[in-house]
Image (cartoon, rainbow, N blue to C red; front, side):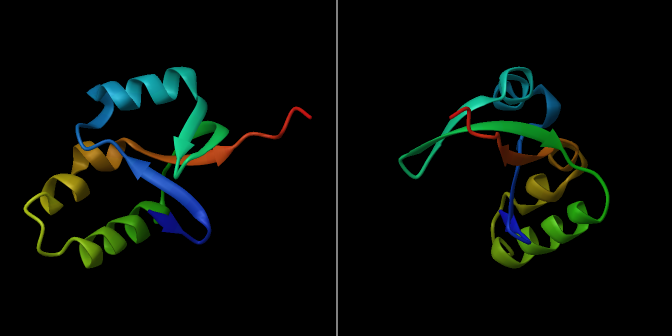
Length: 88
């Protein structure tokens, strides 16, 4: 989800998620929309979590998965995907 121009994701299964573990341990290249980017995954705290939750609630209000997506486990595994500086 994009909030104020920054890209945030959360692991549905929380800190134990294989994706979350790999992302935090390795960072590295990420493919999104056919583009390759060298990125880092930064943990998120504070008010952005509230904004993220509100946007998820608005977007997925009728989803059976909403409770898990905004729950404690997934919220704790929210990261900001930040592009790394180019090495060129």
